Structure formats: structure tokens, C-alpha cells
Length: 368
Image 1 (cartoon, helix red, strand yellow):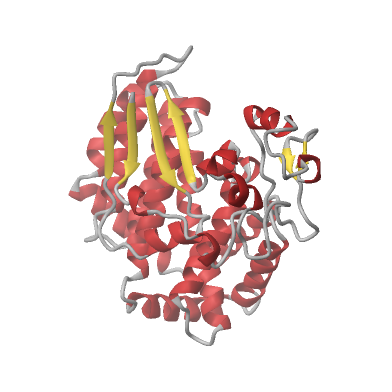
Image 2 (tube, rainbow, N blue to C red):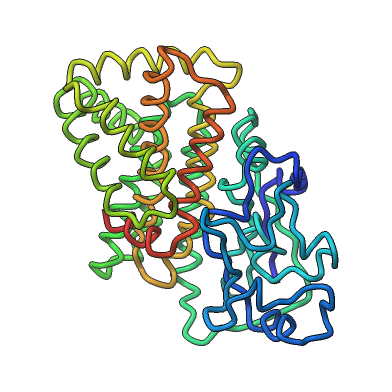
């Protein structure tokens, strides 16, 4: 078995009640069957009446009116964990913010951006992320697992991460190259020309491919009306997502009003101001966008081995980076030309919670 993690994985340590937020509210926590049976046993947790805290029919923890887990105390510590230790926590609570993608004989574990401490670690990182793999003697086989497709997706992902971490290229060009590469790979897959993907990958890292991509992006950016119309059209698609919290609804509706309702000229001027402002941060926003893009591509791209939606995984990754950027532009305008690092982290994790805590939303954004 091969186990892979990003090189910052061991930097994470839950900061518990010192966290500015809590992972125990705003979303329904599902309980795995093993722990559901354990919670049903009367003598396992003698000081707690589990029926007050657990919805055994729906297999979830009950929530308060403001959508906080019933076990969450006023000091943001877990009553169950406090009284009985981490072993009392169900699989979801025990693993979070760790996220595991499973493939035949492979486990890839990342840390979710929806956790404030993880968002801080990723967004405050300057150096390009590396991924560490360890192999054990364990072995498994999946029925009907397409190992040839998976191997090609792995090669493609390596090339995409190489492109994304090439800081001699503007970040919008890098993002465009990755999205275009996902589109072209997907097309060849659907046309039964998947055997030609390696040629595509070889070309993607050439000087010619870079120059062509730069020309296309610069031409696109020179048409401010086209940029405004396209970004507004894509942004409005966020209204199709299943709202995970009322806080999210307020965020994206306010962003639409601030960013787009005054028209193309206002949008173009403020976008330019925002880009200039964010370039002068201690860690430039281009680097933070790179880290976000690498996070999404690494976490989700190879999942196309199960559904064949290669382009969808590219859209999930690249659109997410640009949606986050639009949300931050609005915050910059709202703050009269200023945005703090804590606010950047907050918006990133709020977007991540809306997207990554809902399979419905993950599927919908792939279809945008």
C-alpha cells in the first residue's frame, strides 16, 4: 500500500478552544455504523444519555437551533471528548480535518481547507508543496478498477502541479493552462484517444505551449467587457449550490452586489487595484492562489478514475480559486481598499465548507 501526504501534513495540531471557529457547527455530522452501535450501548457512556444527543434514525448528531452539534459546549470543547477522550469520537470527528481519497492499493490523505488552522498553514506557506509517499507491505485489489486510466491521471496530475508551481509564469496563465489541459485530456478520453495523452503532457511543459497560453490569456484580459461578463455569468452559478449555512448565503449575495452591480468599469478598476494591493503582501496572493490550486488538483483530480469526468475535476479546482478571488475582491472593496490575512483565511475556509462539506455541491460545480 502506498500512503501519500503533503509535506505540511504533520504541521497540523488542533488548537481546540483557541480556534476562531469550530468544526462542530454549520454542517450535519454523520456517524459511522460502528460508533452508532457503540452509542446505543447503555453502559458505554454512563454519564450521558445518548438519546439526547444522537439521532439514531438519521445516523447523525443532533443540532441546536443555530446548527451547533449537541455535544458542543459553550467554550467550543466537545462534551463527549472531554469526558471520555478521543476514542469516543465517531469516524468523521476523529478524522477531520484529514481527508482521505482511496484508490486501489493507494491512500492519499490531505488536510481540509475548511479548518481555520489548516487554512492558516496552507496560506502562510511560501515554498511549493511537495508530496511524500511511503510504501508498506499491505496489498489490495479493487474489482473493475481501471489502473491504466489511474496511472495516466497520476502522470497528468504531476504535470499540472509542475505547471502550477512554475512561478516564472503568471498565476492566471498557470490556471488557464491546467484548465485547458483538463479539457483536452477529457476530450481524448471521450473520443477513445486516451493513448495519445502522453503526447499532450509532453507538449504542455514546452516553451511553445507556454507562449501560446500567455498570448491567449493576455488577449482575453485585454477585453474588459468579456472578462466582466464571463466572470459575472460564472459567479451567478454559485446560486445553484446547496447552502450549507446562512452565513454563506449572506457572503455570496453581498459579494454579487458589491462586485458586479456597478458595472464593467467599476469591476475592472477595482480588480486592478486588488491585484496591485495583493502583490505587496508578505506572501503574495499569487502564491496563495498557487497553494489553493495545488490543494484542489491534488485532492480531487484523480477521482476522475471513478466517473471519467476529467474536465469536471479541472473546473472544480480552477473555478474554486477564482471564486475565492472574487469573494476576496468584494471584501477588499467593502473594507475601503484593505484586507487582513485573517479575513483571507476566513473566506477561504467558508468557501471550502460550502463546497467540500457537500457531495451535492462538489458534483454541481464540476458541471458548471
